[in-house]
Image 1 (cartoon, helix red, strand yellow):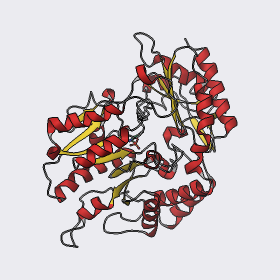
Image 2 (image 1 turned 120 degrees about the vertical axis):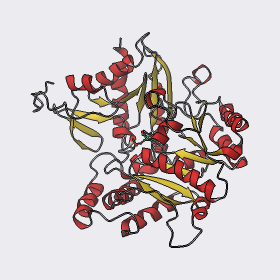
Image 3 (image 1 turned 30 degrees about the vertical axis):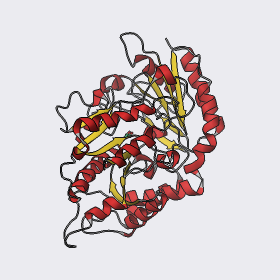
Image 4 (image 1 turned 180 degrees about the horizontal axis):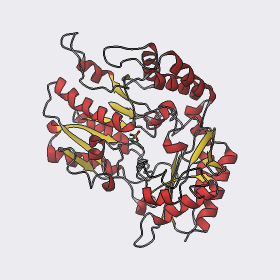
Length: 443
Ligand SMILES: Cc1ncc(COP(=O)(O)O)c(C=O)c1O
C-alpha cells in the first residue's frame, strides 16, 4: 500500500529510526498496525492479522484485554508516578508479594526494571555485588552461551552469543566467556519437545571452570529455552546438570525467562516446567502482557539476605531506575496476573501443546523445511537457507504470511511462533494452514 494511501506524507516515515529493522526496505513498503483486539491486529489497509507471535513474545493474554485496559486507565488518573528511590506506593509492594508467591522457594524477592535488557544487566550486577558482599570479590567473570539472547545492554550483548548483536559494538564487557549452544540438528532434527541428545553440552561449564577457576566466576546466564536465536529447546537433563555444576562451584545460575516466563511453556515459569531452580530469574514482556513496559528480576532469599547487612540507614544496592515499579506498570501487571488467573492462561499452553505440536509437525516434508521443534506454545520451523543469501527465504515467508493475514517472526532462516495463550484450536489450524500454503509456494 502506498504511503499516501496510508495518510502519510512522503517523508513522514523518515524520522523514526526503527529498532532491529531494515529501515530502508520497510519504508519502501511499510507494514503498519493500527489497532488490536484479542488474537488479531488490524493493519492500516484494514485487514485482520492473526497474531502468531504475541507481538514480540509479550502479549500473552492477547490484545486490549478489558481488565488490563481498565486498570491502566484508572491508575493514570489516580497516581501517575511516584518516586522509585526512598519512596514507594502500595501497588509495587502488592505486585512484588504476588509475584514472589508464584515462585518456587527460595526465590522470594523482586527487583523491578522496565525491560528484558534492564533485567539482564540488573541480574548480572546483582551477581557481582552478591559475591563481593559475601567476601568473594574475585568472583567477577560472567559466563553466557553461544546463540544466547539477553537483550541489548552492554551486559546483555556481552553474555549474549549472537554475533550480529556484538560485532559492531567494540569490546563490550571484559571477563566474559561462553559455553556452546545446544543446537544439534544431526542428532535431534524433528524432535517433539525436549531433544534426547546433548546433555553433555552442559559439561562445557566444567571446562570453562577448569580454565578460569571457580574462584573467579560469578554467574552463568542462559535462557531455559533460547528464543530469539530461533528456538533452541534444551536437551533432556541439560538444565539440571548446569544447576549441579553451579551449586558445586558456588556460581550463581541465572535463568533468563524474558520469553519463557508467564505461561509460555504451560507452567507459570520455565523453572516449574523443568523443575530446576536457579538463583536469579530475569523477566519482562508477559509480566504486563506487553501493555506497559516492565521487567523484573527475581532473587533467592540467600542473595537478598547477603545485602541486608551493615548499617540500616545505608542503601544496600546502588542500582535502580527512575521507572522501577512504575505505578501504571504495576497496575497493568496486577490486572494481567488477574487475567491469567481467571482464564487459566498460565497453564493453558499445557492443554494446547499436543494439538499445537501435531499441527506444527504436520509441516514436515514441505519444501526447504530442515527442522521443526516445539515446547509449550512455542514452535520453530527451520528452513534451508538460499545459498549465498541467508535469511532471505524465511523473510520472504514472513512477508507472504503477512499478506495472507498471519503475523509470524523470523530470525535467520528460522520461523518462530509464539501466539498469545488465548489462541483457539481453530486459530492454530488457520495459522498452520496459512503457513503450509506459504511454504509450498516459497522459492
Ligand atoms: C531471553 C531474552 N532476554 C532479554 C530480552 C530483551 O528484552 P527487551 O527487548 O525487553 O529489552 C529478550 C527479548 O526478546 C529475550 O528474549
